[in-house]
Image (cartoon, rainbow, N blue to C red; front, side):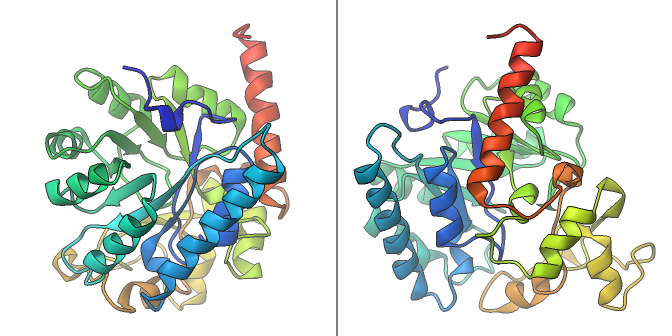
Length: 318
C-alpha cells in the first residue's frame, strides 16, 4: 500500500517524535521547514489555552516559509495526543486540533475509535504508537491509519522488542504506513529502518541537542557527551517503561541500578502531574552517540540527509 499523500513528498523519510516538555512550536517549524514531519505533544502547551496560540504559531511559520520558498514547501506537522484515561485535557485539546485541522495526529497510551473518527472527519490521519504486535492489531481495528513501532532503545516511553522482530511481525498482516523508532540517530539508521520493512524512521533523541529544543543546556550537553551506556530503562517516573539519561537519575539522588518499580495503575497524565514527573528526569534513547555538538535543527537534518544519501550510494541504491 502506498503512503498517504501527506507523507509522500518528504525530503527525508523521517517523522520527528513528539518529546514531552522539549518539543515546542519553534522546533516544530524548524523540523517542517527542513523537510521532515515536525511534531509536539499537545500537553506541552501549559496552560491548556496556550495550545491554540501554539498551533496558530506553527501554521503561520509554515505558511511564511511556503510563501518565501515555493520551490521547497515545508513538510506537514503532527500533534501527539495522550489517550490515557487520566488525561483530563484530551477533549479540549482535540477541539483545538479540529479548529486547525491538524494534518497528522499521533496517539499514545490508548487507541480509541472516536478519536480516530474525529481526526478523519477533518481530513487528518492518525498514527498510533505501539510496543508490540498485539497493540498494533488493536490500533488498526479501531481505525488508526498507520503504526509507529517503538522498539528497544527508543527515547522516552519504549518497548523491549528488537526492531527486526517487531517490524516483521507487523508486516505479516499490515501493509499500511509503518514507522520505526529506536536508537535511530544517523542517515544509515534511516535506511536500515526502511530495509527491514518500515516506511519511515521516527527520530527524537538526537533532536533534543538542537538550538530550538526547549531543554536545559545541561540536558543537551549530556546528550552530546553521552552514549548508549548512559541510558537506563525504568517505569519509575511515569508508570510506563521508558529510557532516561543515567546522569539525571543520579542527580535526583537515585541509584540507577536499584530503582523501584512503579504501579502502572497510578499513571497520571492530567494537570501538571506528568510535567513534574519528567521535569528533571531526562528522557533519551540509545542512538545519541551520533550527536557531537548542539546545532540548529536544519544542520542536523542536513547531516542525516548526507548520511542517508551516502548509505544508499554505498549499497548502490541510487
